[in-house]
Image (cartoon, rainbow, N blue to C red; front, side, top):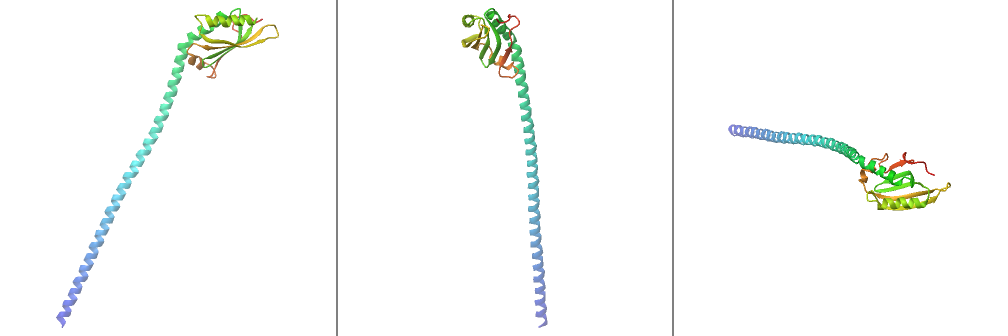
Length: 200
């Protein structure tokens, strides 16, 4: 009958409309959820990028600070060495005056070398007896700044003199003495002292 056909058509139309409405709503919900999650991901990515940039900046600052600390330490070390040299200058002067005084007339120095605490005296003397007297003098002198004095080398020279090598331990702040050398490893005095006369 016609009215039944009309009712069926209406129901089909209502069903199609409901189906379309549900489809649109579902698509809207899915699209909205996607947009929301995409926004959250973009926001989190922006936060992560900002954190990475801040970490990179901090790493660069740390490198700069480390470089400045190294420069500061180097400068402080230089200042310490300079202060030590100034404070020990008088001791060095007394040491060389002591050698000049005790060696006068007995031995004549050609080379004085300091490595760490060990001092090596190289020179010439009129005789081995004079070398022995000099080494004995600086060993027993209460004012001596030398310890463990040993004659480690004696050799006759063509002119009748004796070449000698004496080793000893320097009882001074030897670090400052060593640091005062040109090559930072030994202090060397070349030649005979001005206040000594020429060797025989």
